[in-house]
Amino acid sequence: MGYDIYCASEDHDTLPVGDCLMDLGDRGLEEGLCFHVNVAGMMALREEMEAQGMFAGGKPPSSLLEGWQSVRSDKPGIAWWKLQSNDGWLISADELNEALEGVSQTPVTLHDEHGRRLWAEFLMFLRHCASHGGCVVW
Image (cartoon, rainbow, N blue to C red; front, side, top):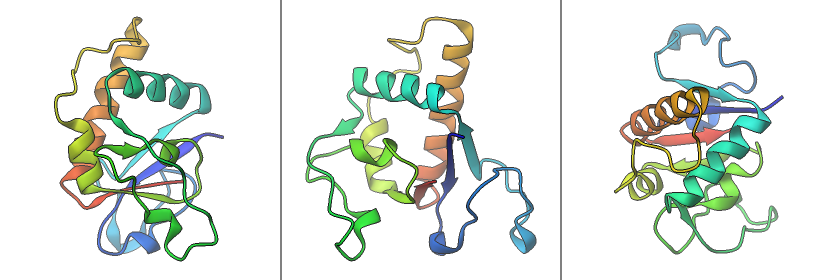
């Protein structure tokens, strides 16, 4: 259980759901393609992201809207609800770039070695995704 976050591309709708280590066929196992984190790890990452001002405000869209998974907040940053569930949310490259602007590599809320390493790896992954079209949260 947890979250698999895939780097998006023009064909983000066809990215696999499930195990980050699965064979992606002719796409190969691209480095940086997927980031897996369990529920507790995502809670810690969301707390750090909040402390560093990476989230945009606003209200989540209704799942009845067409294209609801790619709706973004009207404020800069990542729409907070896109990391609250693993429902196939698309986080655009623009959202990632806005969120990453001014973020510190040194975590504010993650104080142990594991937390610092998780934060560093997550930021590296988000930066990679920002230059490859965004990411999809499953």
